[in-house]
Image (tube, rainbow, N blue to C red; front, side, top):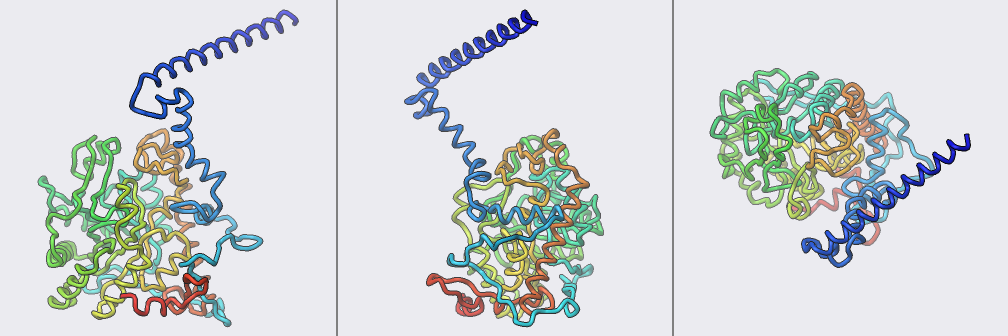
Length: 493
């Protein structure tokens, strides 16, 4: 027994000396390497110690997320918002104790105005179905207010698309394909599909990269494909096309998109065949006549001159030339990869662009003809209700549904290293995304968004969420006092 103990102590002592020796050798190696390199000034001037700066910089965002940031501080989505989505998706208690952590003092804070006599449960009604494109050969009618925004297969993984597809079917909402084309996994769950046509025309392009009528007809032949959306721009990168790194362009994705395998998939920054408002209306008409289904476009709003010209051209051609819907993306919208100058500084946020567009549609008497879809960081019932009150007919969200899938906001969407398996094609990482479990979470999240909408609407004294309007909201101004939203937007032109 004693000999064994002595042997064990000697063995561990030997291991310790070896590890210490290896550590010393490693430090000497790093010192020599750092002192002789001139790429990083910090490492050259402070050899070995300077390396910790890069370590702390890389790990800092994760420590802030879990240890240092307050519930309402973090960007782009704070912990309170993410926590609500996680709880809704898991179908667990979403109530809070001891009061809200949301400050009501910052300028821009929105507050819904409760009614003294809230709507009783027996008086509440389900929002009526809305028909998009009633004059089309195959119009689309849906009751779902909240739907899944565009996320391409390629940008997100196969199990993520599968879970979203099955979850959307259970929830009764639509799912947008994103600009990456229609995959079997979009169709797998049986959900309603909105096919997005990006600047590269992925999935509906010919050998030269132009729109193919035959492929359009092929996509439209799927009964699940209910509408077509022309993507002009998106909030995170207006004026810049989609970016999919070559490491994510697998053989299957290359086939679906009609591009070479393993090469960066970078869409043009604009449609080469849509250079004027007349071109856009011509394209809408061509796709609608070819497919027989509703057609609209998605855009982040910046300069409004083109939109005024667009509405005047519709007036000249007649209302039947108008798009069936317009998706307005906020300048703070999300994406897997975008240049920082665009993601931070270009375009109007939804709080400005949505009322501007709605007001112009009403002025031209087109609001009933053109449905408005709002997009951009609308992941909780209050944000969705706010968009409906500003005039949106529908709301779509990508990142809310990513949170429902289990996204932890690791900010690695563009690196193929997503730890939750949502935005990676690494098979090992995808194993953590269990399709059946995440399917139910997507459905739960959608269900509780609609439930929350009803709670807010009934508190404001209306029978359903579609009856919310600007008079039901006040917003805090610079002096700390609030003003009615309809009054605030009275001269917002």
